[in-house]
Length: 234
Image 1: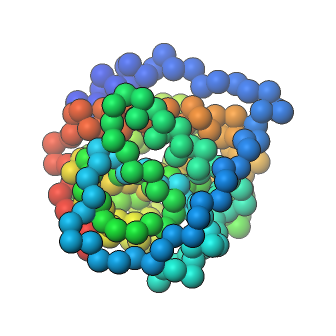
Image 2: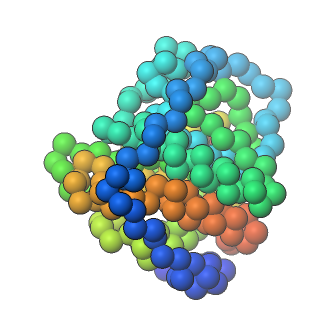
């Protein structure tokens, strides 16, 4: 899939990035502390404004499940431990560069008006090694951002990349209802954790993944692609 011209410099700039190779003893990051229970959603007179929203898939569950009406699954084995590691690094990197970031768990209150939104996940399958990385979006305005992420991540990711929105859980992701993202809102599944070789590749690169997503968001905000998203909320 071709990337819009504006993102070509990003690929060139990042081509020199070499994913770190960690020792086996370093491949199991310490799980982040469980966040406090999230309150039930309440109407907001106006959305909260940030440059970016970064959500860690399944983080805070099952404690938060009773307080929200949407589907509340617990993710693939280990996913709840990994997504916060990646999301925290995205937020840290962006904040260090002066961006304002709403760093949210899986279930959160309120609505947000941002320039870019990412919901970080890993995939799991009952048939190991049958999926891979994937991208989800609800609004056609997020297609340019999806193309840009696919072009960037596939430069490094050595496993299968699924077609966009290959499940309705991706295209109808509940978080999209709470976000207006002018440059795009994406669910990013970084790979399949139920595939042993893929899981090992991902495990040694969690913070690198976060830095790569942060660089992607930085460029997306600085150079929003033509045809970028309008209102994501439904």
